[in-house]
Image (cartoon, rainbow, N blue to C red; front, side):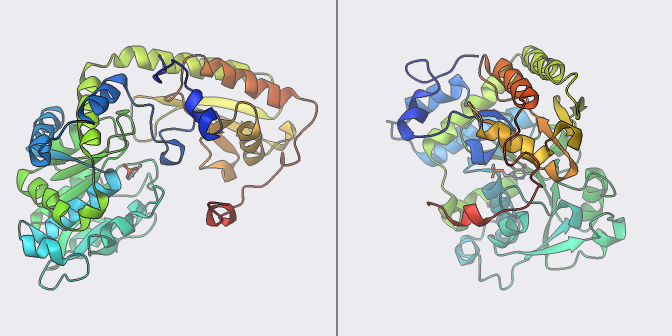
Length: 401
Ligand SMILES: *Cc1c(COP(=O)(O)O)cnc(C)c1O
């Protein structure tokens, strides 16, 4: 894979801006810049950047592409998946009533304004999902407990004020004890309640609609490698009502022409992508890292499949005290090294992290392998090597210092 800056280097602009040349083995993280945008999308963004366009017509063209790839009746591009969730929910509240669109989020009198979500689906993807609900002016009605949701938890929670059911497909959710999408749809549909699916990171563009969802929202900048954006698809009346929120709450979530054109190009590139070749390249990186970690005391590594069934594996790296690191300490050492390597560390308190092979530039898999061996076989350990995994929001609160 090439790098795409004008002079063929992927470090120049980072150097100029004083940014660390990180290697991302974490995943398509917003905090790391979301994605390596595919060249087709970069070309489309650059081409449209200097042109006037009629935005409703551009979104009409996007609707055709989104519908073709997802099987939805209509669709549009938004700023991101989180904004797509807010817009989809707001649409189930307002329908095509333009005055209601302008009254949101605080004036919901006479509108349906409750959204049912299984408690194990109330996730945080950088912000809490219930805030995406509240931004529409709706109230979250949690169903069930953290570990179990039964059919009656959802059925009995539905009442006149219920606007929608929200179903989340993600590794972030509780992965057991929840209702399946089919069960959730069956219960909601029996009472005339539409189901919105958050499928932000899911490679499968068609199955959630096919399994009963009324509207599905994806990120454009995750698996698709598009610009930062979201994709809304599904039943035409609901997609239309969601789109009308551009005249209301979604004005503050505005998507530009460049992101719409870029996401359309990324969708079309996805259709043509050689998925088998990319999978092979990812597997080669995983095997390289697995081999590099062999024979190191206190370290074990296993390939594990993606928890929601996306066609990719990650390397799970277990770190025990014999290595003279904690998992958190090792992740820190890798991030502090040269070049900095950012691992997938959301389960680090459990003594492991993951290496994700999906976002590498050429040559980076080898650098990661070398760094892993170098850090783990060094005689000296850094001061933080045995650091425990503590939540630390202090540095976040200090920005921009
Ligand atoms: C990433 C993610 C989001 C947010 O997507 P953005 O496009 O970054 O807003 C929402 N839901 C889930 C499950 C996610 O993984």
